[in-house]
Length: 407
Ligand code: AMP
Image 1 (cartoon, rainbow, N blue to C red):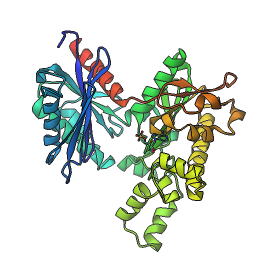
Image 2: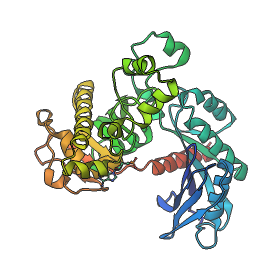
Image 3: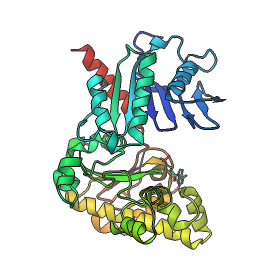
């Protein structure tokens, strides 16, 4: 390893998976990436990619400790590895889902950090424990290496009270911290900054709407570099229609499902999170590619799902223009935002009144790369910017370790 090389391991630990990338941060180069899937389940395996080669290792991967262990071993492997010695990993950056109101920015992981993160478990009971297991597991292997937590929620901590307080009795906020938090913050932060760089305009002067459309989807209003509103809420269920999540519905519906359909909380939760969204409407798939294909063949419910999806998204764009008193840039990102010309066109149709004019030719067939797809006379710039959350995590981790050295 060269002296000026700094390898940062980025970990994204879910309840049954661990995604990883080893990034050489001075060149922002991904040396290796992969995922451990089905942790603790039948058929667990590691998928690893490095040096332009891919490998799948099927193994009995019981828990997060074993998963992290296997990741380190493959990184050190003679054939598929990219490092010779474990001390070539200089820092570890973790994606952490929920930082509540405690973490307004990425932070060095210390004992205090861990205590506070545990306090956030009730806010994300499925995600935060997995993040904690990942941090604990890598700490056992690399006890002296600095670790940094980068939160999905922290970018949205700049929202004003009027955006994050729900109109329910105030004590639920005071006592239980029930409020809008917002998610995908790392992605909204990255693509909004990148959009300003792309257009060579000062970030802090812009009104930007970022539209993150993956399996989960959210939209954010970013005014002068600060998130002032976003569509996901206390949980990632609020807001836009998603692959399997309903997004906004009449808040009485869950109560009616419980009362009239005798559903318990777990089944209401599963209905709204796993069986709704475009999957629920179409009855076909949660995957946008399948729905576009079916809609082309005139499948009525697939078409309806796409109509509802883009109509509701269009309404959110309109409301965020109102919230900011204008917009300079609209950015599309994540699986659907980066790849679906159909959804981008359908969503922006009819917004010409606001000075939003799509260049249909530039939009057509554009997939997965940075581009300006607005027509030359559009007042508002429309961009596609592929998201890169791992890079943001690695950069934040680098910045924190540099600040430690300078102390
Ligand atoms: P993500 O969660 O960011 O990986 O995004 C997943 C979503 O992106 C799925 O709904 C996919 O159907 C969608 N997607 C990926 N590629 C395409 C494509 N070429 N056209 C339309 N949707 C796509």
